[in-house]
Amino acid sequence: MKRGSRLLIADGVANLVFGVALLVFPRPFFEALGIPWTAHDLYPTILGGVLLGIGLALIKESRSKA
Image 1 (tube, rainbow, N blue to C red):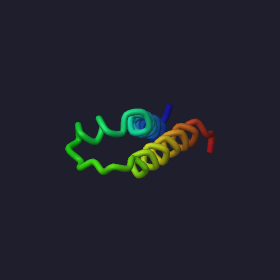
Image 2: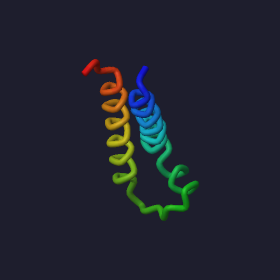
Image 3: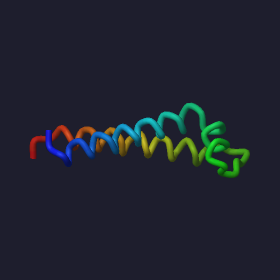
């Protein structure tokens, strides 16, 4: 496995973990980071979905042969 592939996998896994954490537990995640919370959880949920998608794309790209 190439060094670049390992880096893509590590970054992808980190994005997946943060994405799932934001999708499942947006309020505790924000409180732990000290970010102010609003009445709506739309933006943390969108951010979680974006991070999840980026993580999946990075892992998929690390497995490509090109």
